[in-house]
Image (tube, rainbow, N blue to C red; front, side, top):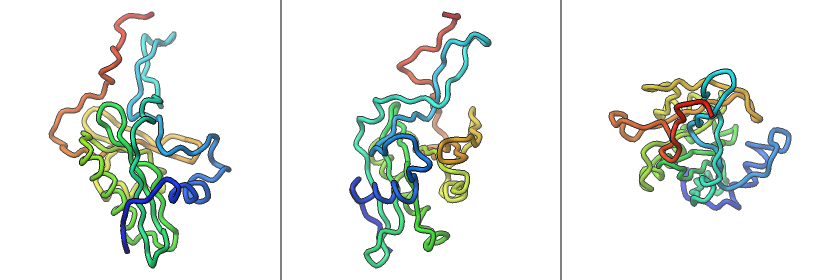
Length: 189
């Protein structure tokens, strides 16, 4: 088993044919994602303000991604990617392991490679939006969907049930969950 960096051109066919086939996606697959970890506060007619989720920011797509592959006898049997997002948050994205190689630790090793890359790039945390079926792989590495001040739940998405999860490089550090570029409005607009 060998883990190494790969290219978008190598990971794309697996994402298109195995992870996100056309039957479950409504848009082209990009090398990065605009999805943000946390939502933003928006005016609301019912409540004064509500947290909008999910939130997307195209600025996230300007960061350079890193792609990881796991090879067994020169066959690509597992992939994942990561890229920096706003606010020094690193996104893990696109984890897939060939069904014949699941439950062998490949998913966890790919997640560790991705989270380590984020740490080396200066991120404060690594986050992802895994499917319900993958929750144990993430939990075994230390990703959490509940931590001081937040509790993410599984929600329906175009690829099934997904939930945001976070891996903190320093769990004792205090993290800000508000986007510092946006002020939370105090009064109804």
